[in-house]
Every structure is written in C-alpha cells, then in structure tokens.
Image (cartoon, rainbow, N blue to C red; front, side, top):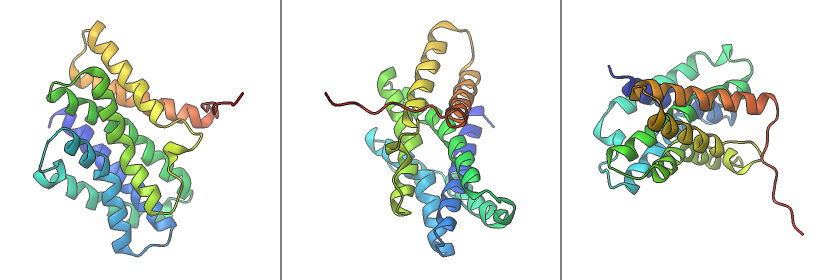
Length: 203
C-alpha cells in the first residue's frame, strides 16, 4: 500500500474518532454519532472534490473511506470508557486528522495541475471543513473561529511542503509524512505553550 493511501486512511479514521467523541460528548444517539463521524471525516474532502470538479466525490468512488469511518466510529464507542479525558482525546484525534488531511488536499490539487497557493488552500479546506461542520452540528463555535491556531498550521505545513519540494531531494512520500508530522507537532506545541494569533486592534 502506498504511503499516500496510508495517510488518507489514517486521516479519515482519526477524524471519524474525533467526530464520534464530539457527538458522544453531546449525548447523541448512535445514529447521530455516526452521522457526525461521517461529516467530520469526509466533509472537507467532499467540498474539495466539488471545487476541483472531481465527481462523484472520493467517498462515493471508493468505499474504503466509509469503512474507515465505520472503524473510527466503533473504536470510539468501544474504547470510550478508556478515554477518560474526552476533550484531550478529541483534541488528539482532531490534530492527527488535521495533519494528514492537509497533505491529502495538497496532493489532490497537484494531481490536477493547480498552483502551489491553490493547493495549500485546498489542503486547508480538506483539513478544516469537516471539523467546522462537526462543531456547527454539535452546537459549538468552530475551532477555526476561535483564538486557537488551527487553519494557520495547515498553511504553514503547506508552505513547508513546497519549500522541501523545491530545494530538497526527498521523495513525495517522505515529504508528505514530514509535512503531516510538522503540522501535528506544531499544534501540540501551540496548545501546550498557549500560542495564539493576536486579534486585530482598532485605532
């Protein structure tokens, strides 16, 4: 199995767990939990595919995505009692999905010949839109609109990827894993050390 396929599987499963945990935290029934897991996992990719004219969208073409959602859903259900710190678990899986899905969006953009800046935008959409949908359906302010650094990490990771692509002799797979790991670690550090973007000030 190619490294890029592993990244897609890992990102889809991580976001499915993230969505399931968020829904269970809101006391939704199993069907509601699955729906939230589904939209969290495929929401960003669906919007991305529509924007680049790739239809039917990815999860309709390949049932592997749905299987990953089901796996993430059951993982969250089965191991919920071991996930004592629900918010910390939600944060961790959301962070993993953020890192992996940024890279998925970038690669999809490159596959259709788009410019680097547009590829980075697609990576950000892929990584963030599912979480935005999850938070809205769970009646939460989306993370992307809070003080916490979120979408900026995807942009920083995308910039790192294209710098490596331009100047370093790494394979695509190696650069993809480095970029995903960079985004994940940067978000962990950002939350640990309370890094925030300062709000604009008025004169």
